[in-house]
Length: 520
Image (tube, rainbow, N blue to C red; front, side, top):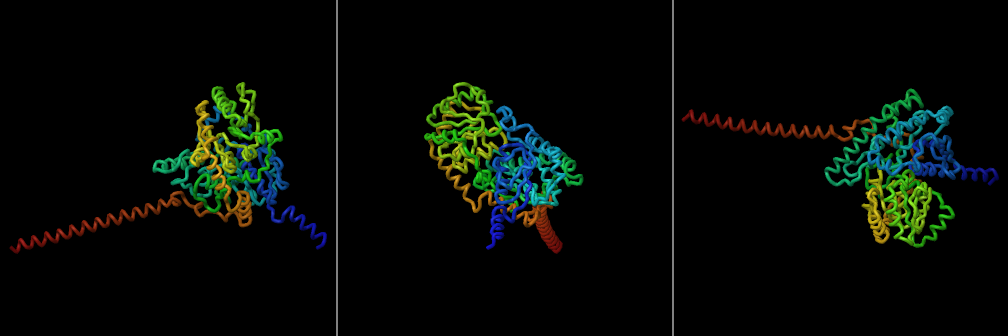
């Protein structure tokens, strides 16, 4: 073998020969959403694809083939550590207006930024566009101007109704709870409520976004862009932060792929040396408490915080790791077994053998991380899908649910004792961990395969025939009505014939009797 051939093989091994150029556009400045999206883009880059990213967050230690080409940081109000408990609680479970307007229509205006327009003026060839399926679906329009490059949508939560409807993936309202519904489906009224919530949320999202997002695409991308509904229907592949072991059996079309856990598999976050030492020395166990990347724990009422202090002090020598933005705003006399930190790398903490309990708000990323590493939970949902997420892990016997508005020393004592001393919660968590990990391919491998499949075979390969049908045709209402009319017609004709036969019979009988009387 010549030196040239040897060099060529080495270069081929390093850079790969089948890498595609992929544009990843993540316009929503939510840190938790971005963590999942980073998992997707990192996985593609590690496979050898060139991934160009437009995002509010620049990845730390990115693969060599991943590059942030437009940094949107600072163009939107910061969401990290910016929600008081009062504001977050006002969001409730009805997030449709926020998703459609604040995190949808308003984000479309980012396409008008000079840095974004400069990118568009110098547009390169891309083999695919990856963007979030959430509120700002206008960014899916980039596939239209990139010579119809396949658009790959990534849902960072369980799919909202408008996401599945766009590609005609069935909603399964007969048995699969909507992401906005905090209940199981078992009765007629459950099915009715689930169907109404699903259809109403879809309708409202469409009303809120059609005009605004169509206008934004035609203003910032191309004047002849189709409307936003047509653009959504052009999605070639949808990747969803879901898995059957968590959310149960749901109908999935071939182009609707579950990839829950992708942000965990290749995560390389590490604890600081000081925190690593503290965790290692916590032989009696660690309780980790956070309300996520947005909600500020210290905005809980003073009475609630003092109740938490009292309860945490009782579980010593078990230690508590508490995520707090500004420890100076906490009441004095923090228990000695509690350590606070402004930012905590969550996955390494949950991965640590000494972590015994995770107290959290019910965010999906944290729920999945706890399941992945088999850590039991105390869930305190505040808004959005957190209620249904916590309900799911409670049903799996790996969590206890608490109302953050009703925390007292006694209620928290009871919850801590229940989860820390009852082996059922740890055993259930370990069982769910095995189920979650047991797959024919990892989430990263699954993502890579289907993204490459769509690029190789074209954006139409997964197009559902239902895309070109009306809703009443998909629901077979016309067929059922026709069958019903046929039954009605058959019953009517049967009754008519029977009545006519009886009428004829009695008329004939009457005629005979009349003739007999005349003869007599």
